[in-house]
Amino acid sequence: MGDLSTEAINVGALHQGIHSTHLPLPDVYSTQLARNVASGKECIPALLVLGSILKFFRDKSPDSGDEIYVVFVPSTLGPCRTGQYYVFFDRLFEEMGWENVVLLVANSENSYRELGSTFNQDVWRGLLLGDYFGDARTSLRLLARDPTAAMEVFESVWRDVMSAFQTGSKELDQELKRAADRLGSIPRKGRLEDLPKVLIVGEIYVRRDNFSVNEISEMLISKGIYPKVTGVTEWLHYADYARKFIMAGRRKREGWLRTMVDGGLKDEAIYLIEKVWKHSVEEKIAGALKPTGLIPHVPHDMTEIIGEGQKEFVDPEMESEATVSPAVGAAAMGEGYSGVAIIAPFGCLPGRLIEGVYAPWAKARDYPVLALENDGQPYPPNIISRMEVFAHNVLRFEATDRSNQPVFWRELATRAGLGMFAKR
Picture 1 (cartoon, rainbow, N blue to C red):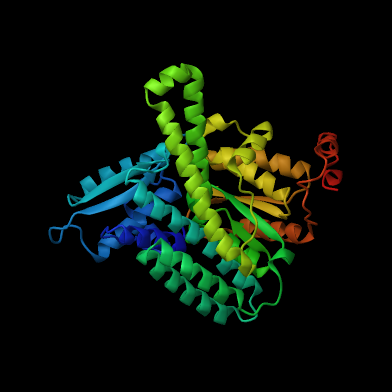
Picture 2 (picture 1 turned 90 degrees about the vertical axis):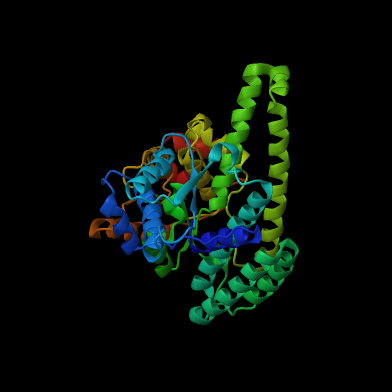
């Protein structure tokens, strides 16, 4: 989930009174630890998480003392192996004799609510802080007159925000205002609005994991391009959308009366309350940080995004990253972005589906697009060359906000094979 989001969720758990620590961030060493005990068939997110677990317990054996360790593992269903990660981990820990290590598996079907509403509230705040401050850090790396000094200020601001977060929501709100003033006062050499931007979409774990997305992000930054990695919160927004989609389908099949008797309407009411609360918290945090000029715009309305996306890409019934990523990428290109990069594990079904439906659509419109598969190893020279070509095309692309352009003429030009005119 990235270094900032991981730390923020851990702080949220501490605020809830949970004796908690986050796993070490994945790296080459931890990934190799996982490969040593794996079959070679597992996809890279499973290995990255497993490697971090093994690295943590290598420094502190789970069999020493009477402590019991609970490893929190999010899971999901759909056309993916994610739902089997925890099965693999559980069997491996049993083979290793780790009797003091148990798994707590949370599922996306109920928006990961297993630990209760108050814990979920702090998780939501933590993910928002990780996403928005991650964007601000990237902006400072590109825009600050003195990037080194700017990073020192950023780290100090982040420490203060985490301290306030652990204290309480009121203290967090007050600290966010101070953080915005401190970040906004950092001297800059340009404006965020003037930077070409690339939206990085794809499989939820690797696109947000520092170790996995580092190469493409660093290359784009070196070219003066802003790599906007879609946030973890986008996945939670999508999980909520999928939850609503399932509940609406149930009501349509069974009727209002049966749904009410079975508690379905109560579930829908709870969902609506959660949605309103989540949006209010996000608006508060985003509103506090946007005056800094460091937060890029990104398409946000999941209902509208999926509604438009299903006309061109994947039906919502698919219920995976392949449903949301192509739609978000298309929306971003209509709102001023200069390209979309798709990153996924090697051989990932949702990743290849995203590429399969989005890349032809983008190429027909002359939109820069790049698809990468990550297996935890450095990219070979031919992939590096593709990344360089992509960056060159992004810099040449004349991005405009096409959200208000007449749809009829844009689509007519596209379907006639005149992609170069569709963006004018």
